[in-house]
Image 1 (cartoon, protein in one colour):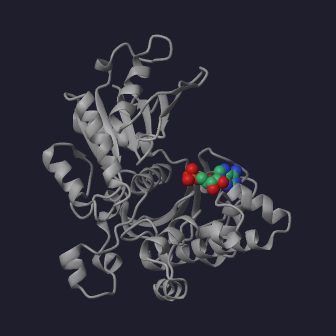
Image 2 (cartoon, rainbow, N blue to C red):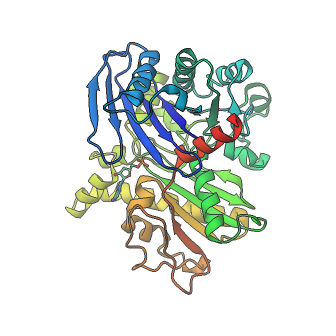
Length: 398
Ligand code: AMP
């Protein structure tokens, strides 16, 4: 079976053609500058990348260019689009309507539209991707996979905000959480590695998705009981450019001092904050490591702040679950930065966490890195959100 996985942003669209059963990716790529001019980068394992400037006034032309290159005799991997069995879409916000993935029909689209106020930056772009695929492939089953869905098992005490209850009742203001597809993939994989996939009751896993965007989840019995992101993806630990949790008083204070409107203020909190904001150097953790190694104190402070906040949330989730059996590290930083992983668990011996620093010398591959006498397992698990999307899509399309 071939599933085309689509992740549509406002001016970009990522795609992967994959077999949901084996996870084999036959082609993947990226459309950029949609609505400006348009560029396609197409990658097939074992072949040279193809980069082509193609006019993409809307997402429809972008999708069409993806289909064209997939069937192209020289650069393609299939003979005709008939060989695409179904299309899976990553959708950011499913609100309270979606606790799992869903086959796209008019009701599903209407529900995604209703979530636009909750995900104003992403949901409209995700919908453009869906509509473009419907236009060029009207008869293919399409599935929406939500970033929020896996977190919908949280209990009320974890998702409610301590503001007047009417805003929850009338306006759906609550914690939703994001990166859900990644948390679902790595927590399920951790359960497999623990030999508990068919018997998750009683397990306590903390998943640390640490990349440009970062979030943690506490998974008890295989289900999320808490996560760090909130109504939107700005909350939780500090990120590449996002501030994470801050005191709301800061908004009023800075807006008053500098005359910022809310849009300017949110742009600062989304795009100019996080480790970039503290360091003034970069949002990229490799740049920060390099700068800190050369003695840049603010780069070091940004790293220290990130490590401190992630470590605090690990402690919080162990407290919330009454212990922890396994901690999982995933995404760009979690999979690749051995130094940061080591610092995150430094001093957690009192919780039964002990890392084998030799085993931890691993990058981008699945590994178990706890010491022999550690009570808590430590896993590095490369995330694979596309595979989860492809599997959900195949299951619903079948
Ligand atoms: P992601 O958003 O999951 O793609 O993660 C991107 C982040 O991972 C960037 O900040 C990268 O600097 C970081 N990253 C990738 N490789 C490494 C590495 N070897 N050491 C530290 N950070 C890394």
